[in-house]
Length: 409
Image (cartoon, rainbow, N blue to C red; front, side, top):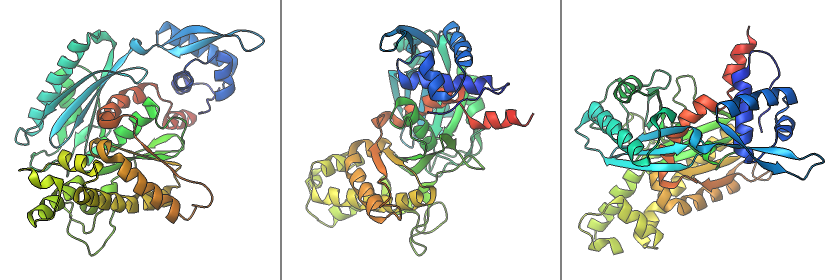
C-alpha cells in the first residue's frame, strides 16, 4: 500500500492514495485507510467527503468487528467509465470499462493495412460511438479514451512515429491524440501497448500491491510495460520496454528495426507462423497438414492439443522469450512477471512454464526468493483493458512525479 503525505499542496496525490486504498480494499473503513497510508484521520475524512460528494465512492455496510462499528467504503463502479482502444496490425479492439475495472462492452474491427492512419482512426471513432450506444451508458460519465499501439511514440504529445510492427500502413508522425480527440470530442491518452497493458493489470487486480513488476505483452510484436517502486516507468523518451529489440545474438539475422539478433526475431508469433508453414511444405507430419492455409490461431490450438510440430515451435519461442525475461529481471530485480497479449492468451501456459523454469534456475538471486510468473487476468482483452486503464490511472492514481513537483515550491 502506498503512503500518503500530510504536507500542503498535494491534494491530488493524497486523493489518489485514498481512492486506491478504497478500490483495492473493497470494503475498507476510514480508520483502516489512515492506518494503511499514514495519512491523518482528518485528512482521510476530508478526502472521503470529497469522494462521496463526487459519487466516486459509496458507504456500503458496517464492519462490526471493532470496539466501535466502522462504515465501509467502496468504489461506485457506474459513476465513471473509460474507453480503451488497441490498434494492432490486423485488428482494432475496444472495451468500455467502469471505475472498478469491469468490462461492460466490447467492439472490434478488422483492419485493412491499406486504409492508413486516418482510416483506422475513423474506424476507432465509429466503434467508440457504437460501444457507448450499445452499453446504454450516459455519455456525461465518460472520462475519456485511452489508445494503445506499438511505438515508437511521444507519449505526452500523443504522436506516433512510424511504428515498426505496423508495416505497410504508411504512418509517419501521426498526431493520434489530437486527431482522435477531434473525432470523438473526448480527452485521449496515447501510450505504448505494452505499457498500457501493465497499467491495466495494475488496475484490474492482477498486479495490485506488487511494487516491482513487468508485463510482457505479445501480440504480433513483443514489448514490456514496467512498474518500479509502484510507479509506471516510461523512460526518458517514454519508450521504455522495447524487449523485442533486445539483442540476444550479435551475429544473428537482420531485424526490421535495423539491428541484428533481436529477441523478436526468435520469439515472435510471425516467426512461429513462418517456421510452421516452412516445415509443413517440407512434408513434416502434423495435424495442420490437412489445412489449406495455416494461421496463427490454428497453430496455437494445435500446440495446446499436443501437436508435436506446433508445440515444438511455440515452445522454442517461449524458451527464447525466457532468455530476454531473465536479462530484464536480472537488471531490474523484479518480483513479478505477467504474461499477456493476444498471442499469450491462447498459449500462455506453455510460455509461463518456460519463463518460470528460466527465472528460477538461472537468476543470480534464485536462492533468495522466487520470481512469480502469472498469466494476465485480462486475457485477450489485455491491450484494450490497459488502454482504458490509462485514463483511470492518469486521473485517479497517485503519482510521485506530482509530489516531487510540489516539493520544489
